[in-house]
Length: 142
Ligand SMILES: [Zn+2]
Image (cartoon, rainbow, N blue to C red; front, side, top):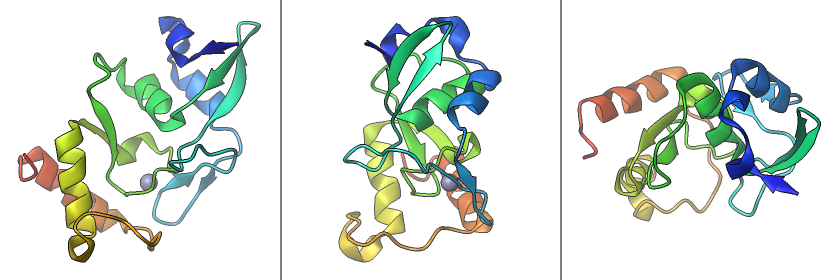
């Protein structure tokens, strides 16, 4: 079995994103929720065939992000969900940042729990997404 790291660069296209997102469901707040298998952190995984070869894909949202935005250069760059839903595969809800920035974002989302999420809360609205995106751009999380 081959893995994400084995995928050729030319696999990362919007067509490939559409193929692997098959079955994901768009919600009112624009989250596109993965409905297939999740890993133990709630992130999408699946097997897919590309050019006749089977691949075991993990971190589906990270692959989809790269299909639209180009390859992520370093493993140290994390994909942050501005909607705070690890099972969301909408590439517009994903920003690249550092692990530290990701932790800061969680604190904003769950201020009374010191950044730790205990209960899977309601989805954020599009307006809330935009607020978080703007704060990130302005470096408020840095
Ligand atoms: Zn989302």
